[in-house]
Image 1: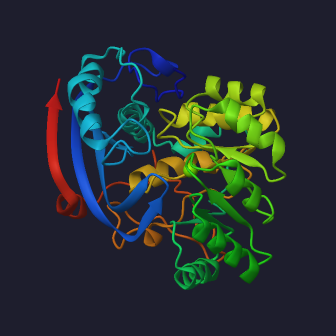
Image 2: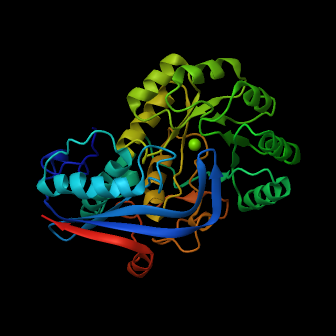
Amino acid sequence: MATLVGAGRVTAGSGGVGRVEVGAVELRRIRFALRHPLRSAHGEEVTRDLVLVRVELDDGTSGWGECSALTRPTYTNEYTAGCWAILRDELAPALLAGREDDVVGHPMATAAVDGAHSDARLRRRDRSLVAELGLGHGRPVDAVAATAVIGRTDDIDELLATVAARVEEGAALVKLKVSPRPAELDAVAAVRATWPDLATAVDANGSLDRRSLAILDTMGLAYIEQPAPAADLVGSAGFASRLATPVALDESVTSTAAFRAADALGAGRIVNVKPARLGGVVEAAEVARTAADAGWGVFVGAMLESGVGRATALAVAALSWCTIPCDLGPSARYLDDDVTEPIVADGAGLVVVPTGPGIGVTPRPERLEALTTDQLLLRR
Ligand code: MG
């Protein structure tokens, strides 16, 4: 796996900045209520239950990472309790022992522990993640345009009110979660009729069929995300060849290699890059670069993160390859009081990329305590 200079998953020798031992790894399972439940083709999220990881270096510097898996394995095969176990039993002990883990899969758990380790090492150097990722690739932007992702509904009045609120807040693009149900397709059509000039996309989480796609293809959408199941790249290529609307891939792209297969098959034209799903920011940036070089549109997706995961993902969204609005809205859109200082939008509705040391935000101790449902401290 690629590593950031001075911030990789194995401390010894990487980046040529000298060995810094990891003294402790802390796991925190936190739970918070979402302001608006998010209903998608794979279920409904009402509360968020995720794992934060703190890595403490021997010099006392700490860094934070987030495991963004959902409570149940409905979106990917990772889920919160399983990630807790793999972090406790495999990934944290390997990091404490200074050896590379030999775990197969588990990208979201891996992204959490690598992210925390990277954050600690960057903070030790007083260096920001976004500056480190941007090395050699042009200056990352200070703030990014954001898409408002809106859950499935067939209550058209409620949907129109929600879209109106997001447009008022400055959303650059509105993305509606959909399934093939006719009432939901009618709801998408109602949004298009009400705001014909508003960039609008849909995300089907692998649920669409030819009939529903033919209907959506008449609506002038910016893109149709993940129409076919994650593993069905051939099916996605078939859809992509018949549709005028660009197909975006999310769950299908689990690595740079998976992206290359999708590109070779013509399975899409836009890729949703999620650092959590890809095992961390380094692989996410590599997919973004590879996709941009291949002529694809690129955006960074979201996992209903806390401020830790949101700030981490924003560092990728700020890179020049990410040309389509990201799904990372401000904290206040998702929860009343973030675990970190809030991620905010500027006066133009752009989401401000944190530029302080490391990921640029830190959990606030009192808020972290209030949200914690389980914790574990492992020492070397
Ligand atoms: Mg998606």
